[in-house]
Amino acid sequence: MFLKEKKYKLVNGICSFIDEKELTGDNLKYKKIYDRIAWAYNLSQRFFFRIKFGGEKKFREPFLSELTIRDNDKVLEVSTGTGDNFRFLNKKAVYTGVDISMKMLLQAKRHLKRWKINATLVHCEGENLPFEDNYFDVVFHCGGINYFNDKQKAILEMIRVAKSGTKLLIVDETDKLVRENYRKNPFLKGGFTDEAKASIPVNLIPLQMQDIKSEIICNGLMYKLAFIKPTA
Image 1 (cartoon, rainbow, N blue to C red):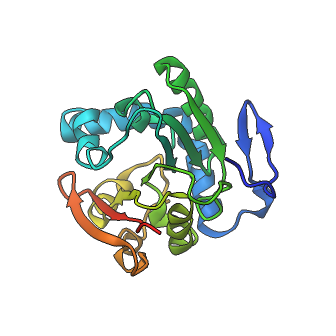
Image 2 (cartoon, rainbow, N blue to C red; image 1 turned 60 degrees about the vertical axis):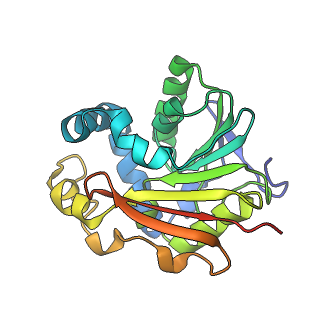
């Protein structure tokens, strides 16, 4: 699964491909933010989803329903955070979750053990996925790409590691969520203030991708962008 030239270290059973001294720009900024809020992230999100949507499952359904995951499929989630999406997906698939924040991944490890979900967790940047080409049957991203150093490189990496014919899904917040929630959240301390970055990156999808579709969902607070990697 891992590229042979990519070296990593194990941190509490999590494969880390990041030398944190080399992180720069938004990747460094938001890694620090998510490390800081990891301890309360899951609980705060569940409270937010209950108030805004009537529950976590109702919030996630509009985008997770885009995914078709069969038994034994190899599934990659980029920016897996605390691992919450896996709880609502086919338990018989083989999951890999990556994130730039080790503290978020440590929370995910605890959650996945409690939920009895077997997943490989990987500490890496979305722009540098340490996986072989054409490896995963399903690739998706939920939250974070708006504030990556290089959105286009991350998208190209997701395409690279997906098998031909795979549907890819990208989900993140809209400018409305940044204005109405993030700017008022004291835990974020102004971390998410550039609402111009919270836009659907349709223009970054390579032209050869197929069936490109985008939609505003979750009462205008999120977007989803789906497309298919063409067969060879």
